Length: 179
Image (cartoon, rainbow, N blue to C red):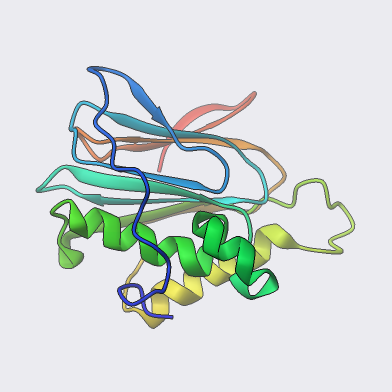
């Protein structure tokens, strides 16, 4: 599926944040903003993946918190909640950021999550499947990552500062690192 030609509906939230406030990206959700004072944040990335897209010149960006790699497992659910799936949520994220003035050639893309979480025996391996789906979709569309922290066994909090483009990851017990 091409990033710019997905059948996913237009994003349901373009948000302007109150000054110095965080915009929360829930599970199976996406938020985009052109408010440079905003910070996008999502919590509890286990096997889910968090993907940030940012245009440093326009200071617009967005974040997706996707749970599953492929919407074909439940097309009705994907229609109602496209951000739940990487194959429908990621194209919607790119379209939304570009709709706010972002330019494809300037977009900075970062990925985190995909932990082996609550599946010690690797029966489902959802985390790795999510990472592979995101990487494959980006590659097919000629996009590359400028940062990636995936795998492991830890839950992560992901933040994107729209004033600077800085992406940070907070892992309980290990502190905050820049991506």
